[in-house]
Image (cartoon, rainbow, N blue to C red; front, side, top):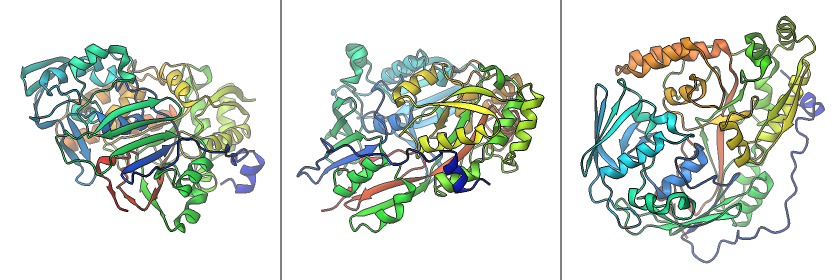
Length: 502
């Protein structure tokens, strides 16, 4: 294992201390105690729920817009949201919609809105893969919609928890103006979005479910760790995400602050896209896995606030295989593999990483670059603004990227999204044997049998090493004690369930 001193020598922790700009406009709490301000590391990318696939966006969209079903982490099952009932028969899923639900525009929710939304998702360059199995969406009556797939699709319901339903009438009217006028059925109504500054929601008084205690909800992007900490200490923010691990003990001593912790389901990894010639060789991909000391990254950069991953999914995910063994940190073996692959002197590669999106992401990237340098791989670290990085990555323009995939309950969608042939442009990976396994498990409704096939896919991905799989985070939130809420493994900060005091 690499020591902290060695990491420092490699420059892994350089630049970790970030200066705080004088003043933080717009962070004053105001007099309304039912107003809650949340500070996260990045801004929302868009209010088009089908234009992007980012967990922070979903956690915000779901306050305004809702899906047919949701996943209950406590009960470990899918539960009703806009759909009260559903059943699967062969290649047909039938959903019965909740009655009496209205959009914020006043229009009633009908099966036509569901059909419109799902057809729109099918056409989306970013999310179309989610509905690639869908042959047809049928409106049976105002409150019954039927989804017909090309083949039986046992995991289809897992794809629906984030696929929110739009008002067909409002969406056709507003078109590309959805960033200014998102209309949903959720517990909060959209008020305004000032890009890079804040966006504001207010409680929807006509919500079909239990009303939120929070009247006004303000989300603010604050990329710098130190600035988010200052915001929670000053009362300028009520909740912050990604508390720096070294600040946890100090903040826990603050009389008005609580640290909320949970093991997240986000899978952090480094992509090794075959678009970059060296990564086409499995020996190079294995060398990358042996060259990176994941345990040291967790211990010294993340202060132990993460859980090492072995393979592409963690233990909370359907499809996890506990028999897998990690690639050991072995620089000598990495050099040997590189030489066998024809790269005795290593190679240069652009390394794209976010800064502020994930916990200690810049510092992790610096540490990884330092470790790779020890085996001759010269990684040029590039840290674009998050929205640019995400857009370019999903367009297939980056090859070696630090990225995370959150909200993973069932491994099927994530594994297909990143490793299925021609499903998305993110990785550009193709393996016919893997495609067959993923297709096979998707058609098996017996969950024990399906999981065994999915585990075969997980083992194959681990053996072929198209990525360096790193860890799940221990998600750390700072909360003012006047706000009581329950973190979820998917990183969603859900305020319609929060309670307030004072």
